[in-house]
Structure formats: structure tokens, C-alpha cells
Image (cartoon, rainbow, N blue to C red; front, side, top):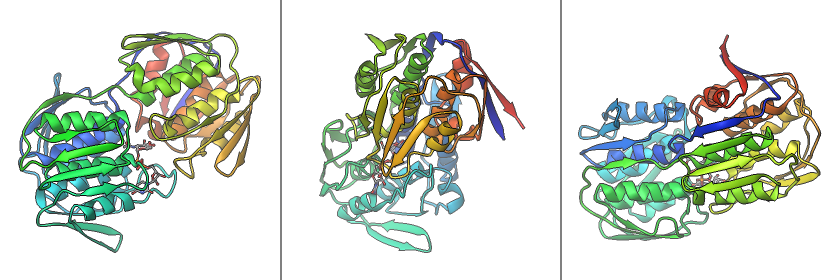
Length: 417
Ligand code: UD1
């Protein structure tokens, strides 16, 4: 089991480059199943979750090769094989193969997916979308089967703007007969990236980034080259690393508009943030102010930033209230942060964070991906050593975080035992 050992107290200074977005790369890789051609995908981050998706595609018969240009995905010989629980439980985003397999092969059977244990995370909205497109769904023995001789375009109104459901329905509708309209769609930048990729392959989709997406089905998709957008959650995490250590960090490969909700909150907390085209400079100002925040679908503050923001507020001046409105069980970092001296009280789906002057190093465990990142941030400012176990959770979404932070002057190492 790998661990991070962090000696806190160093200011982070210098330049850091953000990798391609995990949450854009995963649906884009899955979407490759829709086309019998070969697609070149660039800026795919080297992450555990991406490896899981690649393995799943290979299992389905997709040929994947990598070189300096990027990842070549050849789905000519793909087949809609049953996907068992061993594969599906590794990552919830495995469910993103459902829409493409259903659309191209007329059927799909998968075990219920797994992933971070941050809430119940049902699939009902995905399935309602498939049903609206004409699929028959059977749920038995922990498996979901969807089948349709031919998918037909339809009007779908999502009860909640689910990211995954919007993506799965968009992908299925790309090969459906006729026009599909998805209302109350998720507006996240990753949905726009998926639209661009699909359209590059020959799909006819517009409206991604707004709450109404229109898909004109086509009979076949071809090949394209696509570069994945930068990861806005990684960007936000680095911004907090700079702010919490009172550092001065320039973050490159950033789309400032995508991180605007995070920047707004950081500025409210007294952090200096300067936009420079595709770079952002973050400087500590000596005082972090308490702020209230609520996670919301995009363009609100992302739920994935909730735990890293909490770490920042544990050392702020004053009391902050954090409301989590997307997932019901996303405060797993709280017990661990308390071990490091944070003063946090939970009241249902809100956390009351009373800023303390100093955190202290402790033995902690990364309970999930973003909560793990929150602990790294805490370790960067805590007195003495922090040992973080279960860093495999962190590796799901951050490319060698310890290497990136070491290059900025942090004292952080990975040990294996
Ligand atoms: C995606 C992101 C994840 C992020 C989340 C919210 C990927 C690979 N993962 O996850 O990092 O935290 O968006 O921004 O892109 N829900 C239902 N029924 C459904 C589907 C979802 O009730 O059929 C609920 C979920 O339980 C949750 C909420 O909707 O409470 C948001 O989930 P969703 O937007 O679907 O998140 P994911 O796509 O799983």
C-alpha cells in the first residue's frame, strides 16, 4: 500500500501544468465505441481511472495504442460483451459504455457500477433516457440489460442535470433515428468537450453547455483527432495549494472560464488570483477569510472542490458554512481533518468549519479521491509530518501529485509498504 509522507510548512512557488481532464477523457474514451474507425485522443491524463476505462474498452475488443501523439483507439472489432461486477465496481464511470454499446450494437448488459463511496449514485436518469429512446430495460441479479432493435430520437427532460446521464443519453442519441432533445441537461465543460469529440466523428449535436442539447441522429460515425480540455478540478486543487501555503504559483494549461466559480470563492476568501490567457497566477495574501459555500451543478461551485475548499477554510479567520447539495455522503475527509486539529461540526448536509491557527501532522487515510486531495493540502500546511494512507484513491484523479508539488518546493514523498 502506497503512502504519502508530507513535512508541512513550505511555501509553494513556481510553475505547474495541469493535465487533461479526467472527467472529459473518460466519456470521450467510452464514446470511441460508437465508431468503427480509429480515433486519436490527445492530452489524456495518465490516471488510474483512465487505465480502468482503457482496460474495459480492451475487454470489449477495442485496440488501444499510445505514442507521443496521443492515444489511438480503434473500435472496429468491438463487441457488446457482458461486463461483470469485477470490472464495473472499479469505477462508476464504467457506466458510460452503456449508451455507446446500446446505440452501436442494439444491446448492453452490465453489472451495477461502483466508484467513490460518496452517496447512493443511482442510474435511474440514465435508464429513463434509454427508455425514452426506445430501449427495453431489465434489471436482475445486480445486472442491467438494455436492448433496442433501433433507437429512436425523443424528448427527454432530466429530473436533475446529471453529468453521466446527459453524456450517456447524448452518446446513445448520436446514432438514434431522428432528433433527440435533452432538457435540463448538465452544463459542465466536459459535456461540451464530449459534444466536440462526437461532432468531430460526424455526429450532429448542438447546445452542450446550455440546458438544452439537440441531437440529430446519424447512421454511422467516423474518425477524428481530439485534444481533451484541461482538468478544472486539478486546477482548483493547485490554486488552493498555492493559497493555503501563502505561496505564489502560476498554473498553466487552464481555461479560466471553467474555473470561474472556484476563482470567485477564492477571491472572496482573500486569495489573489490573476488570469493570464491560459494561465492563472495564485498568490497568498497573508490572511484567509472564512466564506460560506454551497456546491451546485455547473456553473455553480463543483462538488469535487468541496473537500479541498474545506481544508482551506480549516485555517481561515472565522467560521464558514459548507453545504453539499449534490452527494449525500461527501464529508468523508472530516474525521481525518479533525485528527489534524481542524474544528469541524457536521449538521446533516452542512459542515460548520471554525478556522484554527494551525493544523498538526497526523496519520490519516484518504477515504476517496477528492477527500484524499483535501488531506494532501492539509499536510502541506500542517506542523510536522503527515502520513496519508490509501493514496491509490488520489492516483485515480491526480497524475503524480507528489511530483508536481515537490517541483513547487513541497516536501512530499511516496513510500511503498
Ligand atoms: C460526475 C463526475 C464526478 C462529479 C459529478 C458531479 C465523471 C466521471 N464524474 O459524476 O466527478 O462529482 O459528476 O459533478 O464525470 N443521480 C441520480 N440518478 C442518476 C444519476 C445521478 O439520482 O441516474 C444523482 C446522483 O446520485 C448525485 C447527482 O445526481 O446525487 C449528481 O450525479 P451525476 O451528475 O450523475 O454525477 P456523475 O456523472 O456520477
